[in-house]
Length: 318
Image (cartoon, rainbow, N blue to C red):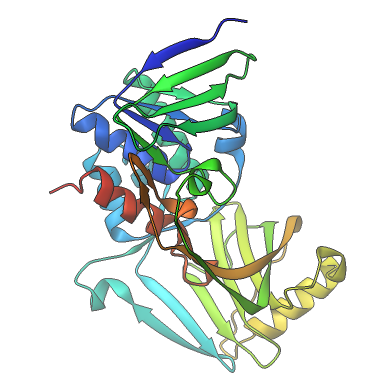
């Protein structure tokens, strides 16, 4: 079997938000890049993850010419509601920050926009690759070896490599001399996706003696809700009836508001952890996103944090 070789300026490992935003930022600067992704395009675009974008992420998408569908289909919230013992307190972000808002636009929809635009501009994204290896990182000719989805061995010669392949990818493992720090929290979240229209026009964060609850949304037809649980709990511990009972109790209020129920079509227990790798560079390899640091989903910062690092790496719009 022949071993093909190609060359680019920057090889990007990972087609998540960080890697794809970097590809667009480099393209705007006239820098060639190739993106490698282990998952299929269908898996990347179909996995429902985070749904909240901060203002500067929205501004970046607009600046890159990628925000048309987001502006049309996204939901823009002035703020959030904090609920204590059934009493609601509204935080008006737009008023307090001089116009900044919360945008609910699911991450997989962002990825669809980034992928479509990159391919439309002639960019290269190779999905379904495997056996990814990083070589010669401390030389001026680093390279990435991998196998294509058709089973062909390939070598990508680069000037630099950007490792945005998450916590399980090979990029972090290639950073020599690194130290890793992790903190595991003594609680988890049971997350569910529900076929139901939004119960509230903004996110609700509720503190209750039975535990925390969060009401969010993903689309006009899908709600995202969370319950605080033990990190050792499993979805088998939470039949639908128990989930709705807990949500009603933890989100209850005296002002007449009611929670809209629907069919629960996805459940999962999320362990809470923070992680940081103290080195983000080894030779001509630079890592970012979950390969370099992980924050728990409690503050809706994971996706925005990845994009923030990418903006610093690829040149934030002025």
